[in-house]
Length: 180
Image 1 (cartoon, rainbow, N blue to C red):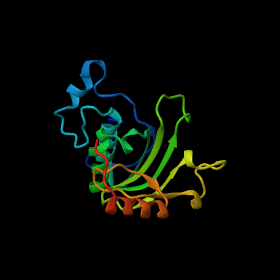
Image 2 (cartoon, one colour):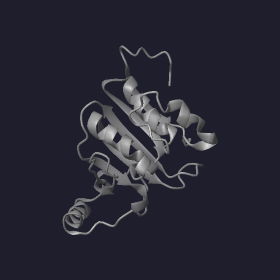
Image 3 (cartoon, rainbow, N blue to C red):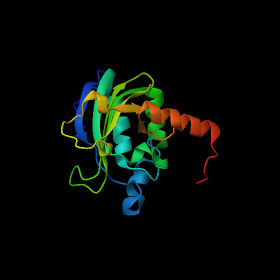
Image 4 (tube, rainbow, N blue to C red):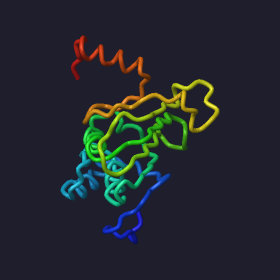
């Protein structure tokens, strides 16, 4: 990220950025130790540095500025992504999520693209899981192929249709949760 950005003014947008995928515990935990007490709300000792990139990018944005990052999609469901999901839920407005799945780039990880606006609070927003679309020809896919993400504090993020959300709500209300 550019060091020429005036923090008093902020940046209107960051876009198309591949945030690095480096586990904080790699290399004897050097990055984990380096960032532990720096003040990142999204810090998780077992997480990846792209979570901190998300937070730093959001801090650099102007009010209502937009950010779009391509990262691993692991934070959507992993325990180490809880703080990042809560950060987005309480402080920002996610606008679109594209879960691109595997084999998109020459990378070992499954990729996703999150577009968000700084400030506000998360509300349900459009998302699409490319792996669930058969014969995907257009990118991004047309609107009828998009479903919805419903952020809920630290809960994992899922991209589901309205019917699938109703089933999930019934299961949560009437089912017996499985233990870890």
